[in-house]
Amino acid sequence: MKILVLGDVVGLPGRKALRQGLKKIIKENKIDFSIVNGENAADDGRGITQDIAEEFFTEGIDVITSGNHIWDKQETTDYIENEKRLLRPANFVEGTPGKGHGIYLSKDKKFKVGVINLMGNVFMRKTDDVFKKAKEICNKLVLNKNIDFLVVDFHGEITSEKMAIGHFFDGLSTCVVGTHTHVPTADTRILEKGTAYQTDIGMCGNYNSVIGMNKENSIKKFLKDKDAVNHFPADGEASLSGIIVDADENTGLARQVSRLIVGGHLV
Image (cartoon, rainbow, N blue to C red; front, side, top):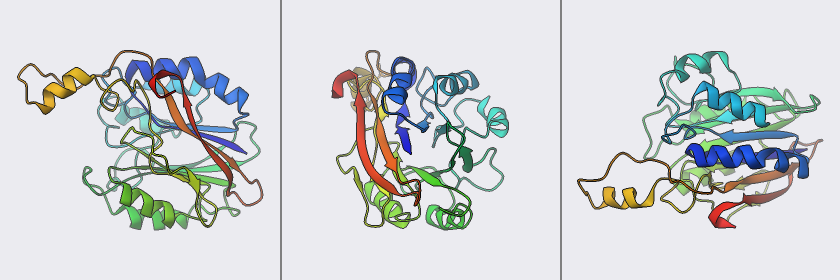
């Protein structure tokens, strides 16, 4: 079983790279299930629209995860209620529209894949306790019981919190990936009990930038320049960044994990 997980898509450059490269990646790597974080996919790099989500599904994405920018487009509130393949962090407060986890079928319909979307508590918008929520969901999505594989997208700011959640899920999930900080970390590995892990899988965006945003304007904002405007995505060629997990069909745990970086300035 091959699972592809891609990092945050940032603006039009990220969407263009996905459009140009995703189907080829799926075909060449014999991908059985694909996930992308779409919370920065809108033209301004904030939020996602229905049209963008449906384009991702058409291109071969099976589930879209998100994070703190999921509500930046007003239409998402209604759309997410009806589209179960678009997730928001599960530890958002009770009553929030949409779902934070789900069970989906692999592309060949043979396997059940659980996907959990969580958001960190440190330096992020206020949410319910992420470890308490993770423990609660672990009782609902169980490998070799009601699911064959389990993928966790942890959208967080700090590495220690991400690493802790990785070890929490070790042996309970196929893989845990970190998103949100947009820079791929060099700690891709399989943890002690068989869960594939990377602290941050990077972004699908232009790396000639500041985390996908125009670098000149970003510097102006740090300098408190009066000419600075709201952040906007950097134009140019984007890299597709993520991981591919080869998972054991008997245990649901990882046999192999590799980083994927295609195109743009990181190659």
